[in-house]
Image (cartoon, rainbow, N blue to C red; front, side, top):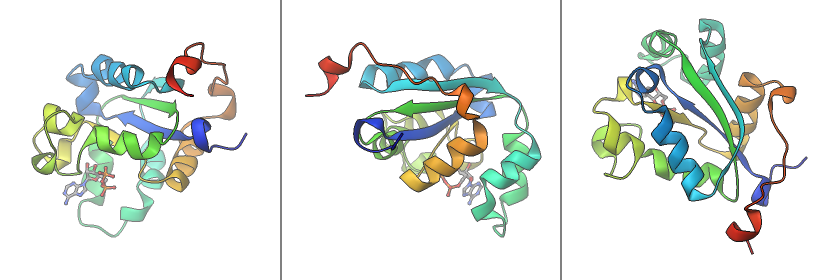
Length: 155
Ligand code: ADP
């Protein structure tokens, strides 16, 4: 299936601090309320190997090892959301990397204070989303389904 238009997908993860601080419900709720469709969801302990690969582009940054430790410090909720412009809109809902620069109303603006514990991950492009979804999910874990409310969300 081509992941374009209303079939665009993004990878969203509630990071270990978000899970421990019980933000999963509200994050899921805001994506649902917006009109996006949940097609993948699991609570899991991510291995350091998976996380090193996920954050490969940051491998030479000074915070890389700390980031991998943080992300493996507890379970994460890995999700795939689908809908028109979901990658870009998901990033807007998240806020900036640094919570200090994130507006109220965004997850990072509302739920956290520092970059090293910023509650949520979201793919930054359609290409990253494809890479991340295939890294975190098997094809069989994604549920293709007709959303019954699609006609009330799209023209
Ligand atoms: P984003 O998650 O907003 O896409 P990046 O891909 O740039 O941001 O960075 C990945 C994650 O690495 C951030 O969400 C944050 O948890 C962490 N991070 C980024 N920059 C720093 C930094 N300077 N110090 C500590 N942690 C950082």
